[in-house]
Image (cartoon, rainbow over all chains, first blue to last red; front, top):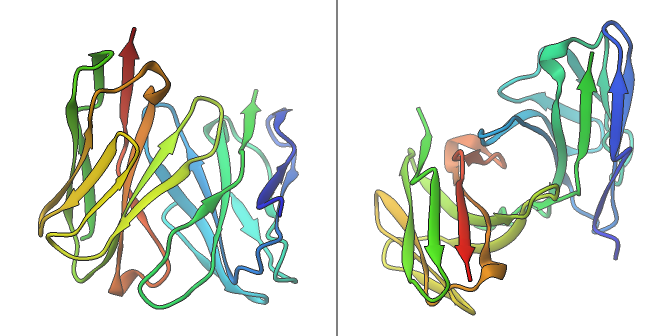
Length: 114
Length: 111
């Protein structure tokens, strides 16, 4: 199993541009998440999904959109990029089962908006 | 409001010098407390889940413990390869499948 994969690894955007961060998992996990991590800070939840066709906002959803058309894929869309969106983005997934929610993370996408 | 606070923010140890990292939490209905290790430029790597006060788990030089208000990650005789940022997170029954993360403790072990 490859686990959770993310593309691209690095990206530089100009203010106002748009892009999609890709996330794929091959563990048949039903829950998937998008986080951002800023220097010296913990992980902040952007959006999450409990299954195909179902998404919900996390703590910091403004400026982002998601979709979940399959179990495996959970892309994150940035519209009209702003410097405040400069961050490292992590995708994670978990197999929801009672009492256990450990999440498994991808390698991250480092995004700079200038 | 569910909250997680980790201390210290940074910890510098000599090789072989044992110490502990703290994770204090406030949560309504703890579903699980999670420890992760994060190396620079990489995603967090799952270490342990603890479910109830009094529970302990061990892996190599790491031992995690849990009380009703905090968790400790004890590092015994650390080696330079234990250098990383350690993240703590909690899940609660009113948060569904979401986790609340602390800001992390950056551990540096010098030879």
